Length: 487
Image 1 (cartoon, one colour):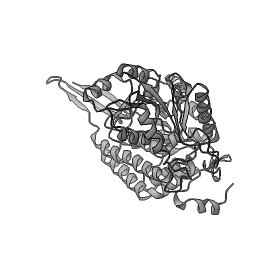
Image 2 (tube, rainbow, N blue to C red):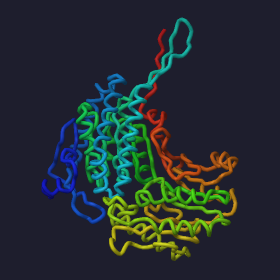
Image 3 (spheres, rainbow, N blue to C red):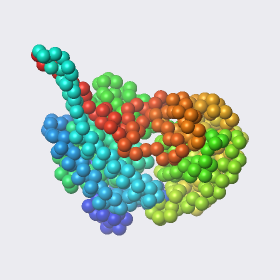
Image 4 (cartoon, helix red, strand yellow):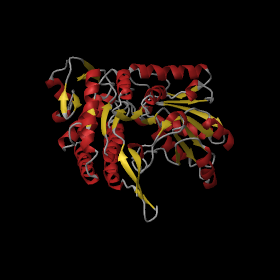
């Protein structure tokens, strides 16, 4: 176990370094702990409480008890607390970003952006809490028909490691705004960011039991606990499609409401009339953010044949400028992947692509200086049926695929079970209108490489999930409609 002195030498803010579970407003520990390491150099960061079935139930009971009071508080009260949480997070932006980079690995500049991005969801839903309005329907003089919007209940939340702060904010904020209480399992790779968020919520007075955070390596057991509990009325999950399907099956027994943000296989389409420089800039953002470890990363890059060679040449020159370094260095753009298993997966996909006929224009291997880093890579002559174009890469690899006609690329782009994000570069406004309807994705960005913000509904179709997070629609899944007839 690392000593307190060692830990405090690594982390910037003593008060935000929490390694225990947060249940019913208390910091609790168990006899079991698990290690959290820095993915860049495998250095040991902390030993964190490893919760089991007993703590899972404690947290569910705490959330259920707190729901009785929290659900009856005024929207103004909930709004005020959410806004205070938002402000407290921004005041500790640097501390939170430092912690995030240490445990997740992403560049520190991106980590700071994530803190603001996540906090903006909390601010947005602090305002949406004031807009939960029902209806009175016209029913005649002798009868009144009311439609009430009421909080659904306790929410079980499972978040991923690639955006450990933002995903908690994006899920917890609408839940609390609606009057729900939450039980959260952060990814075992990145629990420290989640626990720091809980501490900041605790500091501003969010009542005990409203937020409960359960660090654990027992992911399957936690999933079974929240789906088996009659006290948990909603599940919100961001992660792999395979795990999402399993949770959906388990949630069916208790008819729990679900929000699922699952895997992606995003196409990035560049037509012959596109602004090539703008398309390359957009691709750099979409492909290489978080070293390619995002669910909305460009995964299949379709370039019109007439501009393919020009695009490939200019793109490679741009990729060569990416700085490969420790995420704590301000200039870093490409950093370590989350763990050795992730590196092996990306490496295997590139090797197989080369065996299938793809050519490496740049990169193509693990960094010789650090085996936790896969170098930024550009592949040409990729075919749409190759493994690297059919699987979610989750690494800094850009496979370039030629196309000739609009209908051809629509068919290629839609030929996937995933339907999360899509990017298109074209100057033709009529094409933009057509493709808005014909491309089978929950989110489409035209002429830009960044797609997500708190005002827009984030989510996918097909096997990429169900429900939407953010925007005025994001609170709907945390509310039940109740019809009341009064004679």
